[in-house]
Image (cartoon, rainbow, N blue to C red; front, side):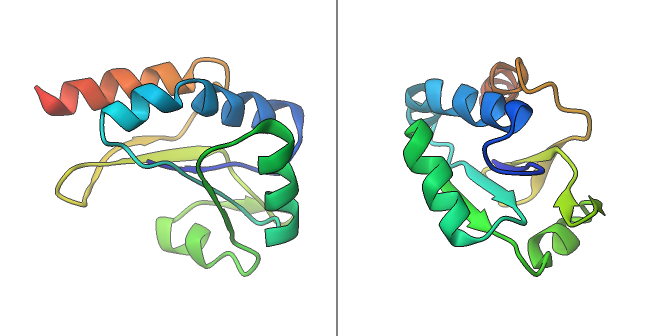
Length: 117
């Protein structure tokens, strides 16, 4: 699971990251790794992760290489909020172009379960 988000420690991004944190055990049990990606630098990511106890990796994408590789649009140096569920075979199983931070984590978990069926 790779989720792109606009900026560390902003309301929507914090809500989304904390929802993944709160469901971390279920993701771990399902064998799903989570990577959060934004254009913030490593120091910002470290502070954000520490402040909210985020157990997953936050990737600094200051040169937007990840965003470009995934085709994620940017505005004023911030990435669009979009997620990619990577299947067991390493291909993109589902794209979430319109993410609601409040329910996104549960939505992804349902799709992860469906992949196992």
